[in-house]
Length: 447
Image 1 (cartoon, one colour):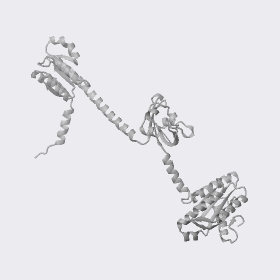
Image 2 (cartoon, rainbow, N blue to C red):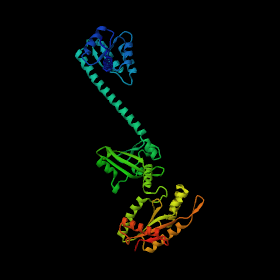
Image 3 (cartoon, rainbow, N blue to C red):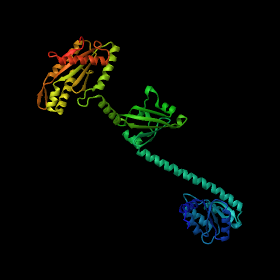
């Protein structure tokens, strides 16, 4: 038993339904058969009707290349039928060729044209003439069909693009060669705190101060390379609020300025920059005290040494180690110890000058970096203030406690010309103070 090829049958039916169609309307069967035989030479399907009423039904059901319409028919004649067809197909008129059997019908030529006819053929029909006329109409029909399909494709593409522009979170602005805004998506209007109409037609520079590094024109950059990017822009909304923005400017089309089209795509970078700042803070600051951590401290020390070297200046490094903190931490718990470390950090901030750095290096070790120290006397004064302040009792958790500190001090360039040498010198001096029973800080000089 042979199986049925349903897919093949469906494809064949689809092909037949899409083939161009010509309608022959004549009440004389012989005339219809002759016309069908002639039109069989063309890639069309031929529909037939023997009356105007049948013709109207078929016109309502099919897209037609042309209608061959007999003038004289019983009941509704050709002119009446053509008039009804014209009303039925007002939005998409079908070419009608009248078929007339006698010369006296020529008197009604003008009436035929008024009802929508485009031509007349005199019976008996010249087959070659009929084929040439229908072939020409078929060519026009196929061109119209292709144009209609192209139009549908473009319309679907535009609809998809419109939905994309509506849905995308980035602001998108179209800009013409005069740098006037000619397209705005909803996200752009939202980011600029306005309606699209408030941006349309405006000079882009009034809304988006596009600036390039080194004073270059972003439009020139986009024109030369096709694309310009910046992550350092600052835009101002129509309500006056400034926000950091990242944007790209692309040249879409155009050789001459008047035909250029640019697209600006931008986003509010506020949250991204806040996240970056949070990451930087986490990487550079001590999580507990908010002081600089060891990484930031050592990097700053390197930079300060370079600055002092170039300016023939001086700086001081103070290394601090708390005395008795471990026993307090063990006795009262880590939460209590953390609160004490915060108090100590707060006291250190209150002593140093603005621009100097306090750092927690880890555990109960701290450091202070004093820049632009004219002589050792200033460094010793700060060191004395730190020792005195940290020796004062702390009230923590309702309990009064005392914790001391041992400190070592190293000076640039006297005690070292590199970060490592200064740190080693300050560390040696700090351990000397730890061992001393009479002094709480030592300078590295002379040790």
